[in-house]
Amino acid sequence: MGCLRDERGRRRPSLRLILLAATSLLAGCARMTGTLPRVAADDPRDGFKLLRPHARAERCEGALFGTFSTSESDALAAVFRDLLALDEEATMVRGARVEWTAWSIGVYGRRCIEMEGDVVRPAATVLLPMAGEHVGH
Image (cartoon, rainbow, N blue to C red):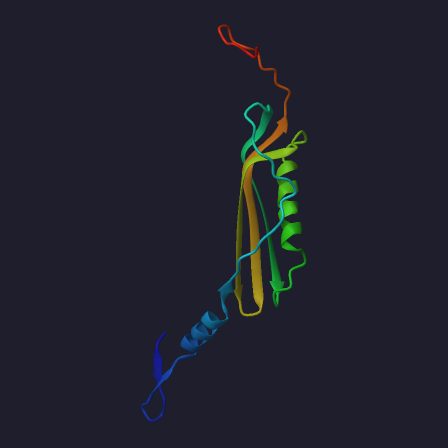
């Protein structure tokens, strides 16, 4: 990489240098938002059965001219369904972490959505008072 000299001895940029500069001007990244199907407060009294700890699912999609075939919300819901599909008993993901990445070079763009969390299902729990506790009056 560097400069070439023309017939008069003047320096001119090489084709590689020009392509690198042009690609840098056309490259970029993005920030996206989506909708989660359900978010609920975590109550320690709610029981659950841990089916798949630290499970992970990812979906990536490429597009020309920034036209993706799915919306951000649909892509997020699909990743959530992928996590639940890891176990036939699964109904929830606890402690979910969602990461979106997107980049583009020229007319081609790519985005990935990753979700990680504990795949669980509800489980009935019974709270029994311990000896010496006063439960209500």
